[in-house]
Length: 285
Image 1 (spheres, rainbow, N blue to C red):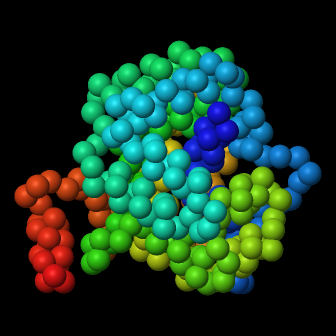
Image 2 (cartoon, rainbow, N blue to C red; image 1 turned 30 degrees about the horizontal axis):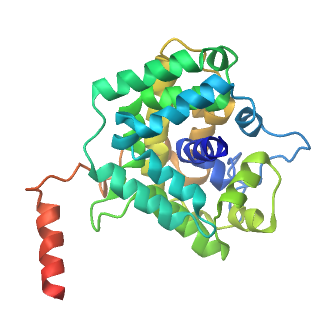
């Protein structure tokens, strides 16, 4: 069941992308966000991965082969965790596939939520971060998908891998699975410190604003309608998301997409984007 922990690790990074950028605390950053406080104790996020009950692990694993696993491309998340190198390209591949496919329908979402609610009942009652995250993503699928699927209108590039790619390029270090996990745990490596020291220009972009805005909308939705579970985790609170406004400006807190960004629509056989892609391929032959 180790792969389950890895999948949830990526989901946590994607849900709370400010974790990768270092939990901004104030505007006096100089060259980037200040590092999170270090502690000998593991963060609640990391601790939760080892606390999932056996029944919850089995329930979550069963989603891989079901309709929700297919429409959400959960196997794409597995490939991210199998990467030994930078995770930017695998994340881009996963987001591209998931966002170009038809969204999960209500039947798939309803079935998946019932599986988790039943199999993870104890974990949800104990507020396991991993269990709450999985359940919240399923019950608030639209808002979560909208965050993942933000993309630039100009070239169709997706915002989440774009922003993380900027951080990687400026830092000179690769964002790998191990570096992300150590950053979440508060055990900073040399690469983690490099990520935290990049200038704000790496993430104070239209794409950065889009991801932060959609994250705030997603978290608001979960907090207002937790679907019968307790939702009280500071690390994905709007207070954390909104602290980006101190660094990047008030537009990062208005929960609106910049004019240059859109939510990607699923591709259809008659979509203009697909026609464009086919024409481009034809010109290369």
